[in-house]
Amino acid sequence: MMNSNNLAHHPTYARNAFWMRVLWPSFLVASYTCGVFFSMFDPHELRPFGQPLEFDRLGVYTVGFLLLWGIGAISAGVALLLKEKD
Image (tube, rainbow, N blue to C red):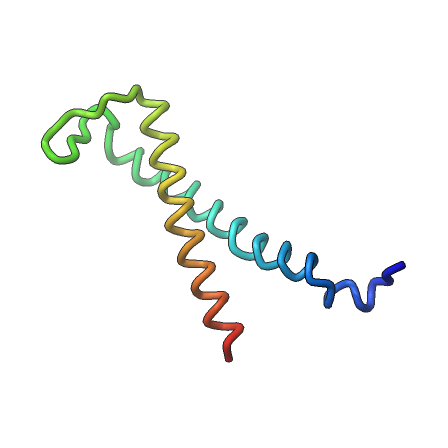
């Protein structure tokens, strides 16, 4: 049985802690950034590569949020990995 003293050294705990340190802040940043971006731009007015989007508003909000979350997660993950190398 594992006590709380050596729980922090367990590989599963360390991996889960890493992912929570990456995904939770990036989720908060994506939520904020998505809100700011889509409060300034209407999804139906976006024309990437000169073509109108073929999604409804909810689809554009979803794809935008997931892209922003992914960018934030990559950024946070790289920052944590670089910090751990020190």
